[in-house]
Image (tube, rainbow, N blue to C red; front, side, top):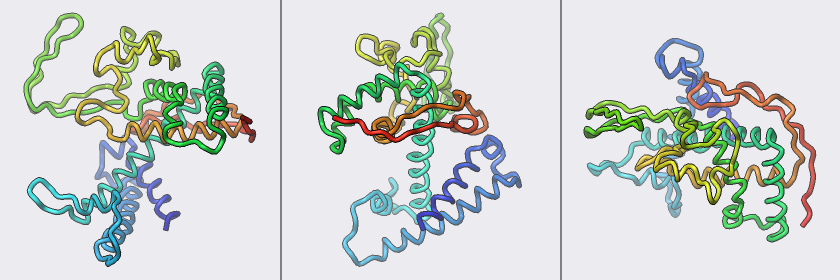
Length: 296
């Protein structure tokens, strides 16, 4: 049922992230009906899987699904089938859509910047010469520093989420650079505009320029600028737990493409679509490709 699940996930995600759907979730629109229909069928499929796992007499697998099934609330209650299903959908959404969008933006930025494309290619050549073509593993991915900084700079310029919301649990005071103070009372909601924060010129030099070196040794603008200068993955206790996995996932994708294909961006560099919560490229990103082989 993999094909059905993939189709349903596309329908659920595409129709859930529209601003009209978020602002008017119960309106009788076509997008809301598609969202609800896809969600109902996915819930049905995943519920069958959960029930099958619970009833199995075989050795229990130690995986994410089992951890969710065995999890308990603070009061000792077990998670319900509905809660496990909802958590599964949340994990799939968090791991798929944001990484897919960032992979697209990363490719567009690299193919639109010949200098950094050449630098990323040179790094891949060095990796192959050092380890061979078929020995890429986790530790080797960690050595891809140029590609890592390119992804990080892409996330600065194109964060998947334009802002983060947090509920204030206790009163605190904010002091601005100009010396103004503001009392933030308990119970209020604080919005942190990631896209705006990532373009502050007193933290990031020439923020409109794609410059992965800003995160390199000797500059490290995100660290020099302060603790929460870079929040593509949020920050604090609620920072995205999948940050390292996301970097690894996108490195796997683009290191493979760079090693095996000559790539050229044939469409104009995409503008940002503001129609959804996740900031996707507006329209199609068209790439011409030709297979090649990097020799050690």
